[in-house]
Image (cartoon, rainbow, N blue to C red; front, side, top):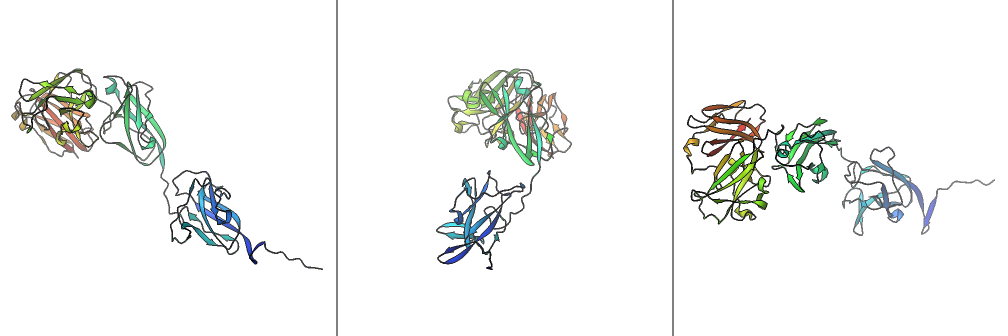
Length: 435
């Protein structure tokens, strides 16, 4: 009887037998930040076909595996995504690569059935540990009631990295002026955004820098008044009244332009800047905003054409608020009666009226902790407004003199401005730091 022997499958190339072996692959995609559907292995054994040999990840652990029969004693290959929509970019000279005709591929010898070690996509080693950050649900609330009290708010949107700064619609179902939006599965850490209100087709962004929330739990973020960095609802809007602006050029080392302009958020800045007229005092210019409604105002003056930014007043940081674009605007909190604000162009003080009445005003201690004393003196009566760096009024005193106490209350640590005005309209702004 003849004996039968099982022979291994082999391919004869040039008279030399090359065995057919099973080769197993494993690639870890957990560090890959792009999107894909399927991982393929493509190489010289399948004519570099991008979709011939698909790997699988049946347990959804991010490691894609597969076994292919190969008839060769060595192979070059790469892992590719979705029919070559993307493929590995490998480094020449790495421990697992070989460069052939200018192309750097993975390389391995086939010595019988072979299992190539698991590696990270585009690397020769295992993936380094990538911590999985927890995610949380957050609700952001923005109060625009002070804006709505003086006009119309058609809608409010929130823009930030989470939506590519494109903006997503917030809602106010109870009509109280506080608009809200909820995001699910937000990565822990800093969450940046700005709110925008929309009126008659115009989009109005919050001023200052980006607002930042540190996300560390599921939370409903405290209500914040539109434009403010500190939290708390908008303050009540004072009664509508006229505001008169006077700007003095008598201290200037240059000749004023033929026309001086007043511009602010209430004029859409340079778009509808107001031409001021000469005042009764030579070198001064005056303009009045009649029946002004919002409780606060940001503004500056322009020495000539307001569309030319080089003409804009350089507002000093000491008496300005951050305008969000590298400069400062003047700021004023209305009293609810007719107000007059007076400035020297480009300076914090106005010396065309009795300056001595304000020269002795001080705040002690500064920095303050729980309280500070504002020393006004006993000559005349004063109006005092304290506001944060975004312009929100946090304290106010009317018709006062002598020493008054500024309590910390809900003031968080940071810089604040103290605006003091006398009965003649002269103003002085001091800074105070709350520790």
